[in-house]
Image (cartoon, rainbow, N blue to C red; front, side, top):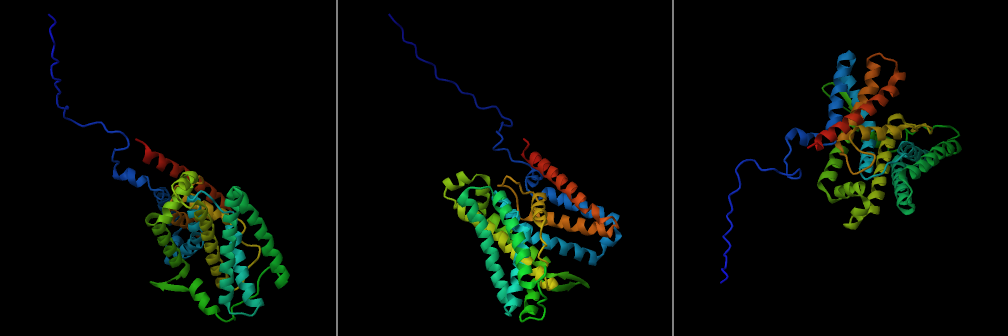
Length: 358
């Protein structure tokens, strides 16, 4: 007679006590590693190193007036490096930024002087033109699918020729006329190129504008939907479009931000020197891009911050003035910048690898 067998109930033992293994996604990294993950940490360390170097090597560098000069030099680079950095985070870059600064200044000057109008009219026309140039770059890129390198290279060459040709045609010279005696000049100079004194040391107002723009850009990147869009389109525009991000609008608006930065720096140059040389600005676009790269922004997009380019521009200011204060041959300036750019890039790479290493 067959016998039925009843299965014995399974006996489960409680899990052994002790540390459980967690996969990499749930491991909480230490505070130093979390700090290293920030894109601005590498350039901050580099800026500290450069500051200490020139503080030791150049006694003049330690004075308050020298630091005011360094900050002024840094601010004129940093104001433009901020929108350039945002554009790079969005996956693009602009080679026309340097000559666009001069285009803006030339426009404001010639509209005011040749048409005998209040300088604020020239400032407004220059703003509209600068935004239009940025919009054209962005529209042309998204419309044709051409790389931003080619589009803005064409704009760079076009603006360079237009700046020189139109200035010669209108003023019969390579520079604009002096507008310091025109209506509204004093008010515009107070906004774009005035000075203030702290502790007996005179600083340019561009330093305040630079820090204010940096704070605003940081807030936009980290606290707004638009900031999320910038990172998304720079990381993967197809994935961003699939989840509803307005890719074309974001990219065009980023180019327009570069146009705004070019307008502001152009106005500073005009009201600081009263006149503008039409052949200037060539090569400055590389300085702006280098400051953003040194600040931790990737050429591939999707990574970076607004604080990093602040330190990147500060490094440029320290090097450009520190070489002079140290009594070195200024011909070595570009060589020093090249070494600094390569070194900062390697440091940023090491920082990112250290932060992501399990």
